[in-house]
Image (cartoon, rainbow, N blue to C red; front, side):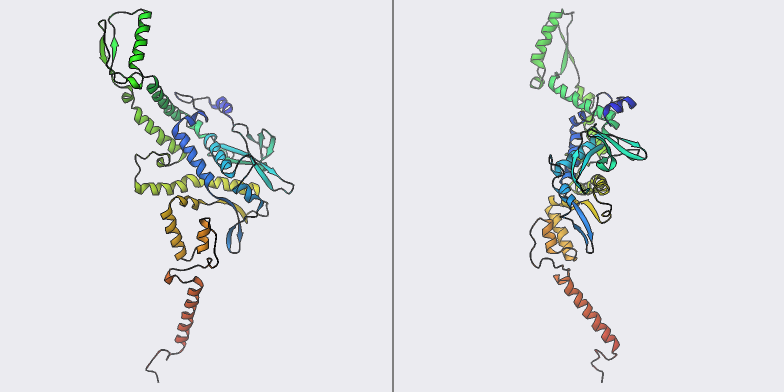
Length: 398
């Protein structure tokens, strides 16, 4: 729902500075958090999978695979589609896209709607959507909703947290104006007489030219006509401006559940806890959004006969691509325990497979898993045969 609806019901209580979804991007922490979450979701491999007798496999030939993995619409790539939908739901609380169908009820494209142009409502126990293309049934709309209270729409986190964001934005604008126009001498002037308007204007202009702006910071004031010098403190220290800005970033990170180090706030980060924070970021920040996407597309874009057998899934293992050492250790462990073959690893690394690379191994002497099973079975058979003959293996038997 758009901002005008919100203001009619709740008013526009946004603290010292008016905050909207658009203006909130002027806060560097908000922009950084939205960008981190949006681009991380957009960068993950997104595929259609099919359950088989041997497990799950990517359904490369499924009609929906190309839409999710490559191009959901002629206007944008899969990356841009997901990044845009994520940015909208993070700021407005909801993101909408129209599903285009072909003659056999297969989706052929997803078109994103602009924020504030779609309004869901309930009628005759069904959900409908007022859109720029007319009224659409729920099955024709992809709706990614954030945290909400009616099970249908999400609430805008920006407007929900408008007051605290307004304080942060006010501090940012104050700092910008201070350094742009502020005078920062070590004191102020007091004239013993009342000055005429032209005299005040001349003094003000002279003061602005000589003592205002960064290039004049700390200049010595020249006193004339019995003027007094009054020492003053720095306003930024009195207002604890630096602390206010720092708290603002932490507040925004908490709102989006993004670890501060992801937006380059490293004052409390260490080498040891950043790795743990990164894992927690995947589990607790990214995963809820990925599940929202997966469940919404699962229930809207596949045939009823396919549900439970065909599904879409994000591959979060791709986040390990940025850490070579972690990738090597992971692959080595999986190969040594017979979980991955060499070809499995090469496919993860987008490399061609090779003949004989599908063999799986176990750590003991790195022998093929099937050979290890043969040896184990042979030893079991020999042991059983020995137990059946009391004299087997007894050198002193007659």
